[in-house]
Image (tube, helix red, strand yellow):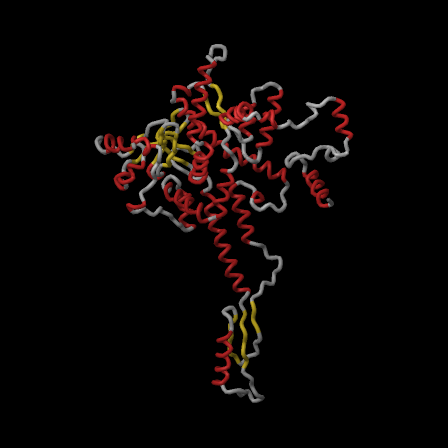
Length: 482
């Protein structure tokens, strides 16, 4: 029973009355005040970005763009060994244990959530639930956490145990360490409020690693631009409504002597009948003066789109190209260079996540001679990294694992899939390999070149990123002409 409970991490009990999460919608003036003193208003800034992450599709998409700049590809490398003295069998057994440990961490799924929190709030405070080969990471409430020290390059977490005075029913949802420290340290040692959690099972990952004393959301400065964007949208709606508004005037006729040509009461009755059938966008007035129609249509055809400008300013303030989200005129090469620059920001956080993994790995007896190397790979450069690793492998460098990882095949899957396909299924004998010039004789190569069915003439077509701007334009022109 105890083991089955440990393998499942409980989050809350809905039958005991679930608590509503706290959200805060602050004014623009509040945001300006928070940014003027981020140390004092740390909690308020965190709540503001959490709210905006759910309320603004622009902010959500920006965060997810940076999260998508890595696929958490990694390789396991030997660490501090002498190849001439190391026992290969022992190293191989320990290597298998390391791969099983990393598989239990589910790095590509769990650590993607950590990266999201770091890019949104700056700091992720976490602790591990460990049961057998399964390791589940639980996020700690940020308002009750602080960074107290750094160990092996990884920040340690100090937890405010007054949290359980208010939420004692949640104590069962945390590892046993929390109960022990709550009862034996917090309550007995003069009610010590802040207690450092054990490493390496508890840790912090920070985006702004150069500022450890407080959290500063990396995109908090965009909150003002997001408020401006919403204000521009409201102004445009009001302006559009004003442009669609019109007023009709019903004029009472006058005779040559200046007397009413129709009884005033009858004129008022006719006006009321007209006003009752008009839509909301059209007003009416009863007047003896000559007025026909007043409208508020936009006369300046060159008027700028303020919403588009506000969106442009938003992404410019974020330091990314707005064309990544609404590409109308940018070249592919310019976008790739912009993405590479942004990817370096994400990779810095990914390296910190790798430090968390290695610190826990080195705490295990079988993991002291291995380390995890997080690769700078994403969907945007996997081909480039793969081609580079493959080229290096052709010269004898040990790059097979890096090539496989860049293509989405981890080391655990690399040899297991090879064993399945070759030894178990024998697929190498079932399927005939594709022919290439390296497998053909000179006469076969010449015959293939003379064959009229051998593909298209000319040099192979280049991929995006390999072409110059003029080359891209030529490629598009040739596609247009078919």
